[in-house]
Image (cartoon, rainbow, N blue to C red):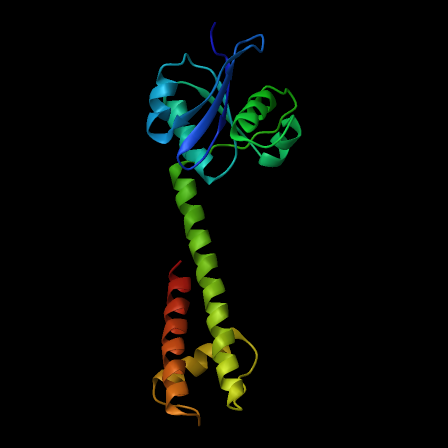
Length: 197
């Protein structure tokens, strides 16, 4: 009996594959280690492969397309209604297999490596912005503890950080000023990285 549709539940190390024939008969539902996944799909005739959309699914989607399979990604929320019983990898793979065959299902386009690289820039910049905000709040908090208040805005913190590193230190204990210097240095470094991203 020939496999026509496969539901692939992605994981870090062990993937679950659920394969059915054209009439819906289950041919396999088994776990496969990451290192053996492509070899497994190489043995299958070209078929429809469904996966829940996530960062990892784009990579595997590209790999399976190279092997001649038709790959479709679906939002996880759209697959959830197809889960018939308690949560497990085998049940999830079965639900994915059923969902990908639904004629009204909405799919997610597989991203290219370049598209994923651009998204990595956005995520990295977002992380740096959050870290900069944390540092700005820490600098403001430390200054407030010694009675110094900075004006509102990230620019005010940047201006203070530059002045501090140039030697214009507020009236506070040397230890606190030393820690403030480290934070100002980190803050300005993050500012430069954010501008670079």
